Every structure is written in structure tokens, then in C-alpha cells.
Length: 313
Image 1 (cartoon, one colour):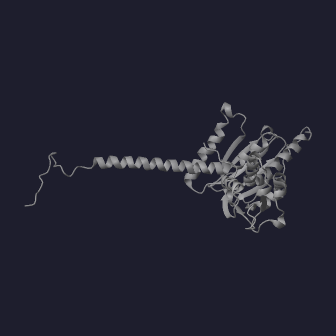
Image 2 (cartoon, helix red, strand yellow):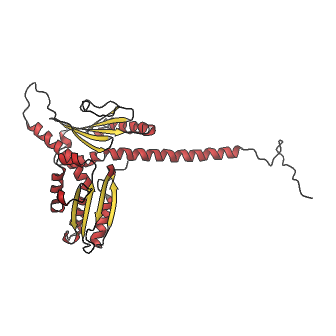
Image 3 (cartoon, rainbow, N blue to C red):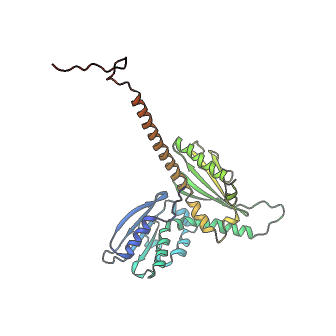
């Protein structure tokens, strides 16, 4: 199956082009989860100065989990303060093409980092959950003491869907709420999600996170929350991340891959539907050819001989 890229390809290609041939521009484009971008040259006379703005619907939640601190760590002086952020957007970066790195490798690394702006913003609650897990893990365990669980961190990155993070002493639980509006999507979604559950039984996937899926019924970890969808169209996918998945060497890769789970799932559902429709069209064309060959030839009599042709006199 195809793996989706965490970086915004259009943003990366545009920045690569502008570093070679700077020019004025004013472009708006979107990413997954209704994230909007605006790349422009504020001063048309200074074509080497770019302003990149991004709007995330759940920015208030991300900011409460430390998203701005993460972006300051990743982008430093490029990140503008809240008072300088473009109106209607959550964050803004000021990019000076003339002050960029001179070597091609460093320039490519900077462009990749900027194109990961959405990924880095959404990484804040995950990094916070991992940090809480480390603190709980380092605390001594008393005999008879139950596992301490922190408050559920919710990120409502879509109008009807959310990510719930629950750090504890021995694991970090990540729960996705998914909405399947069509019956076909629900059927294909169950097939894909059941494959996630069964794949861990294979010897090559023993180190993968544990995956659980439930339809309609929310997991026990979030069942106390209000406003959860318990209709037939709702599904809940639980990833259990163990300490080996959130080490300093693997945590960045874990965050990147788990962020793309929802888009990965729905992307392949749409691809499966497109493939099934194409196969149905091919089979329908074959059936039509069979039916056309089964039609009797009007130029023959009942005894199989040719009809007498009438000629004009």
C-alpha cells in the first residue's frame, strides 16, 4: 500500500523554485484536515522575502499543549509572534531567501523542515503525552498502587472526529474517532481495520503497536467524555504505544506515522472503491458484449437460410 508523505509537496516544490528564481507570488492552498496555507510576498519590491501562514482549525487546543513552543524550537527566528501573525491564520513564518543556507544540502533540509509545518504543530500533544509517560515511568511504584492515568488530551482536528491521548506509567494510548458517512465506507473500513488488528499476529509485526477497533462503542478510556458519537457511523481505533515506540530514537517516526493514520485509512478506502468501480465497469462491458452476440441475426430465416432480398423495380 502507498504511504502518504508527511510534508506538503506543493509547498516544498514552490520554495525550491523560489530559491532559484525569486519572484512575487500570492498563493493559497490546503492540506489534509482542512489546514490552509497562504504563501505571499508582502512587499512586491522585495521578492526575496516570503510570508508563509498556516491556519489549523484546532489551533487553540494545540497551543494549550505547547504547539508554539515546538514551532519555536524547530524554526527559531523564522516564527513570528502572535501580534505579527497574518490575520485569519494561526501561525506565520518569515522566510528571507537571501539569508538562507548556501549549500544545497542545508537548503534542502530547511525546505523540508518548512514543509513539515503542519506535522510539527500537531506533534505538540504527542510530545507532551510522551513526556508525561516518562515522568510517570520514573516514579517509584508502590505495592498495591494502581496505574496512574493522566487527564485525556483531546485534539478535535476535524468537525466530527478527534484524537485522544492518554499517557500512563507503562504506555501511551492513542484513540482515533472516525466517521464513516456511507455504508460502503463502513464495510471497507471494517475490513481495513480488522487487517490492522490481525497483522500483529504475524512474526514480522510482533513489535508493532497493539491495535483495537470498536464500532459505535467508545473505549473505556474515553467513555466518560461527553459528546461522543455512538451511532452506527462512528468507529474508534485504539493504538497502544509501549515504551519501545516512544524512545528518543523512535518517537519522531512514531508521531509522523500515527498522525497520518486517518488520512491513510480514508485514502485507501477511496482507492479501493475506485478499483471496485473500474472492475465493475469492465465486467459490465463484457456482459454487454455477450448479450450483443446472443441477439438473433435478422438477416436469416427461421430455417437458417438467408432471406430473399427485395430489389427495386
